[in-house]
Length: 174
Image 1 (cartoon, helix red, strand yellow):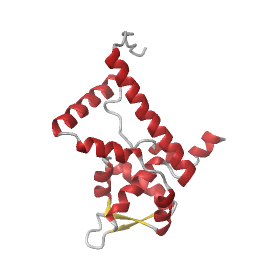
Image 2: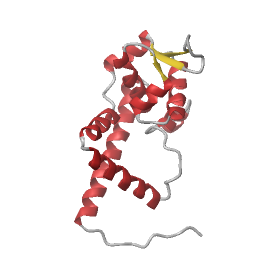
Image 3: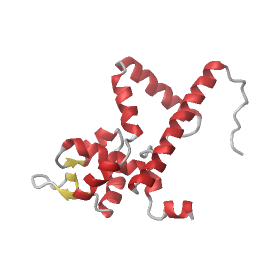
């Protein structure tokens, strides 16, 4: 039988936290819908395209993972979907076959012209602008929150990356 959390009456600060958290989740959901509607790609795919764009050249997967603050295996899955859609190219580095380089295609650049901004970019920029002790405190609190809801050891893919699975959007709509 699963553990049941004890119902606790929330105070005003808990309410403020939950409201802010709900707004963030809602913004991410809306970004997913906008990315699908405007660009025909997932928000995770859009976020990766936007992370590649400023480089102006091919990036290796590790650098792309750093730019997106995501594990390289999660980025790799999203990149594979972008390769399938011909929005990026992926090739082995000439000087080091262990490195995989990813670059925008002309089609990928065209998608970015009309695509909305990715909220993950604003989230990362906001956190980066906070002092280090604040970032550490927020990270620790979020890890404790993840543990409290039973998600401490689960993988952390990109937001809505699972939505980019082939056919999933069609099944949702149909």
